[in-house]
Length: 235
Ligand SMILES: C[S@@+](CC[C@H](N)C(=O)[O-])C[C@H]1O[C@@H](n2cnc3c(N)ncnc32)[C@H](O)[C@@H]1O
Image (cartoon, rainbow, N blue to C red; front, side, top):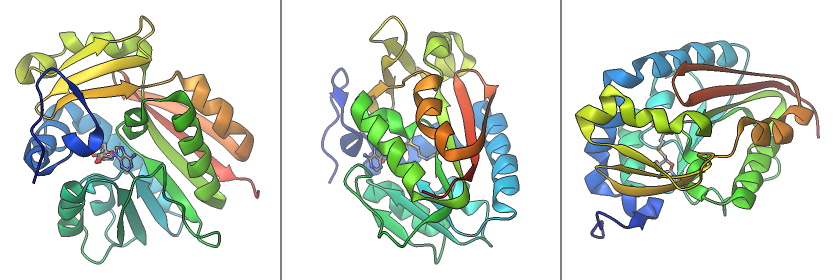
């Protein structure tokens, strides 16, 4: 049973991502035309990355939309929300899903993934720089030699523009900066108030770049950045 969400209090992700948020989430962030370019960009990029690669782990996979676009690949997902994973299982028959907090969870030493992803700035929910650093280090460690890492980052310096978007006007969603640089921010939508931390891009590239042959980033929707690293070096 979902706990009640208080309209003005920032809630933890396990409170937000309960059953009552499943349908609004899909309507707002999967099916809404605002995000179509980014979803299509992700599919195109994933197609390229998956071409030579074997097993893919999507972390904080939510309803498993990205995984469902590649039914013939070996895939796995992890998320802490039972309600989101119920949808993910329906959309991805036969795919193993792990219900766990990614910060606590560890995969067996011998299990590594050719592609590891984290979409929609899900790391931001950790809301703590040290916890985000440890998560990114973990995602790097889980990537197999030769493999790729794909992160979808929030661009903190562009966040405030979100409030002028048609999407914000239509849905009532709102960003409130909690620090002038946008690194700390709250997001209010149908799920309640999400408390977020989104470090600058250099924070991520400093951790990731030394372990990969190359990195690249691009932006197709304002304030969301696609960061890809490929050619993971052996540990
Ligand atoms: C913005 S949604 C993104 C879902 C999906 N990646 C997508 O692109 O639609 C964030 C997801 O991160 C999950 N999440 C947040 N913190 C988490 C944690 N510490 N461990 C595992 N999952 C977490 C939430 O349950 C939610 O499904």
